Image (cartoon, rainbow, N blue to C red; front, side, top):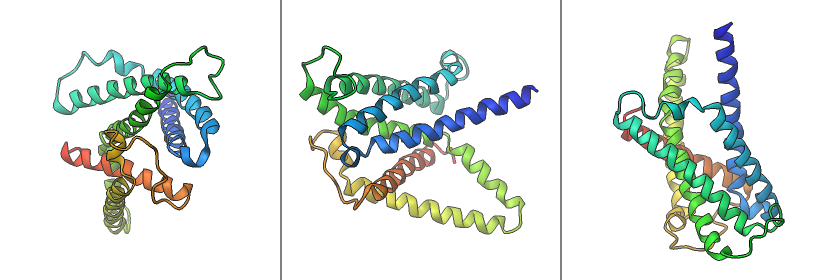
Length: 223
């Protein structure tokens, strides 16, 4: 029964991970969804992040416990930086709100909030990529189990080729979308980029997510 209960909690956590990823990708599509939908999705994202943290509340109590390895220390720094980024994104979003939070008596700082929101969104995306990359080891262990099945080795090689293609496409998307310009605010206005439609834009963003995640996993020798 305990084992079954653990699996149920794990399934709920993974479902929330998928939900967060979905909301994140839609949230990054501001130029396609418009401001009102963006604000509602952002509010849903905030609530989902709070629930995600509640489901993983034990992690906070383990920060001061365990052996301090480079990977664990970096994981703590990235996770805490991500929490701070999301909190500040919430504040900047409220300052700029034209729909969801108009009932709040906030009228000052919209310009500065817009700049922070622009940079913070892309730094947050980078941090999420790194956060996911630190868990790529589990995914790779699962892929390696394919070797136990017929045609498993062939499928594993195909997955490695696919990973390389997605990695290269992620690097390409990072360049053509000028993400560095948003990270360091050398570009202070959100441009449409080269994506012909919302689906292509989401595919590019997912590829970037994989690019950063896979790169950090390789550098840390996680996978």
